[in-house]
Length: 640
Image 1 (cartoon, rainbow, N blue to C red):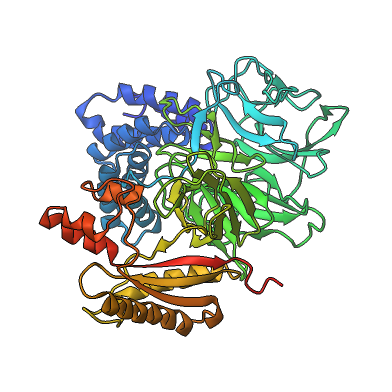
Image 2: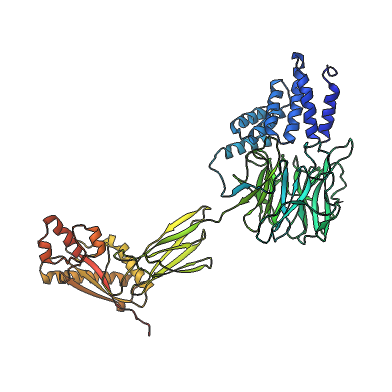
């Protein structure tokens, strides 16, 4: 049967797959699969479908892989990993509910498997579409060709040269890769011009590029040495990758030289990343001693002997953990399909803990997608480039830019007088516990606006000629989101009486009611903010009652306010009390005219005026006349 179905071709496909020639293997498996059309061929067709699916999965063609795994299951293929891989491919396609069902089917056969449990956790975690970061992601128009372009890397801290790998049609050599079906990758570079614009990418100069695959690079801090991944390809031997070095001279790069990490010639070594201090080389390998799949390791570049170490279970999983990038000596970025994610490879940020472990965080949408996201490099701030094959059914990689916009946190408001009229040219200061100190003059309409930082405590002070100062304190939120705060300042006049709202007494008595405490505490704060001011505290009654009685009642009420202010720490010699009874009727201000439409600005609420009003308006006028107010007496208390 094998002979009749092209068994030799099946063995060829298996050999291609074993050597890592996934593109060629997928084509051969497809030819064999299409010949198996008879009913008795079903068991073999299931096997071929499974192997073909594996080839598609390695090519990151997840839609084709998912279909082939489903066919393998339908044809009765008994390898339980078909359900696991099907779940991974469905997850990479964003079909989370179907992926969960496939993972569960696998767990029925292999209870407790960590990769399946992690897959389910990732699906559940990221089914929430609202979960996303503030990064803005765009496919870069200049660094992408019609083929794969991937693994960008800044040359140095000037951030004006970007290197990356490309399989475009102009690369060195004519042979296509048995692994990907594309031409073999070369390293390209783009430089910024004097205007800060990226120039046309060109192949790096020198002897670096060859007919083999070169890519995934990192530089030493001095910029003189490049570490790169280079594919090892020998006839009838497994395809693997190794780490090479190239040195720079006169802007040209030398022919690569193999960098020996261990004597192991079977394992693959790639994705080099030099630490910012130049002491360590981080890399990816499937060498023995890891946690499964590909792991991230490191070796000391200065004292290599005995320094090789695996980054441990915080970073490495039973899946693939790869593409390390050390942003600082304690912050690592890497790609993984073994940590909970959206599907395929996701990008993760890992921060070293004081105990030597790592805290790992998924970078979330839109940096991560259901496809493969990997190969990140950072510019001068929260911006840079990374690689993704999102939206490409062929599995081709493309370079994307990312940027974290500055948070827009502002505080704005108005400086007004107690009649709620704008005070032009008021001066506002805002001081933060982060050391910031800003000053601004209010606009003609009294408005102002300041930019802020999140999680900072601020003190604000507003002042203007002819008015008392006012102070406010607040702390901005720590949430990573835009925020708009509002605060208004109501400044008290130095030249005219200022009503203190919400002062309440028991009926016909001078006893302050508890609800007056808020207003009186606010007045005490004004006096503390203006320590050189003395005031007269005045109380006024309405027209009811005798003059003698009203003078006595208002005097007692004014003294009750003074006693309270003294009890909260205001010096007695800054305070005077006075009861005016009904002798000083209130003049309607602009604010009162807006509040009480039956009165006009400038109306004086004398007894004669009130008696001429309708009865329902008389009580309102009496209410306005019953008031407690203060008047500034001096502004030079203890100044000499």
